[in-house]
Length: 285
Image (cartoon, rainbow, N blue to C red; front, side, top):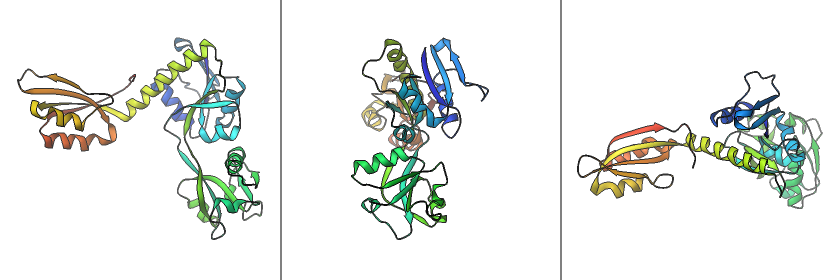
């Protein structure tokens, strides 16, 4: 069985379980369950702390896992990102008291408070900047006022919390993070892991594509087919079939869900009719 680590709590937990559920895997109904076998799909799920998942994958205790890119980098373990999953997005920035720092180079010799010590050390090390990184478990924005640090590195959404603490962001972003599928860093994997991971990736990609796309069907006069197809080129190529009524064709194409209404308007203005939308529940691309 392929051993898969899944976040047991936090912002990544429910979206990860929902993604796996839509991909056809069993998921727990009781949050107290820590291990869940899914023999029908030849996998076994382990529900672990998000911060620990990269460590378990890196040590080979489990084969693959879902965690944040930030947590993966921060862990410094022997694990690699395999597939970005499109949820749990966040941005990491430096912040300092208003008007004190304006560039990354000015961090040299300063004290940086963060909950992601490994990530910050990697970022600064790659740029040749020496600074003291102080690891805190949370509420890092208070560290400057309390004299623990000169600046902070943290997740920034609206910046409201930082501003309330008298801080402002500066310099380049450290990282754009999101939930990712990770595996152990190894050049020689056994067939069980390779095959199981291939199936898992295909299923997850299928769900993500199904979430992003819909099927669009419409009828269009023959002289307008090429113009219509240019509007709906599809994921690879649209299906075009002649209708019973001579001189008309039916077109089926995958289009981005968030562009649906604009495309329908464009097709109708062109001369297409009977424009229909169908949701995609699963696919293999």
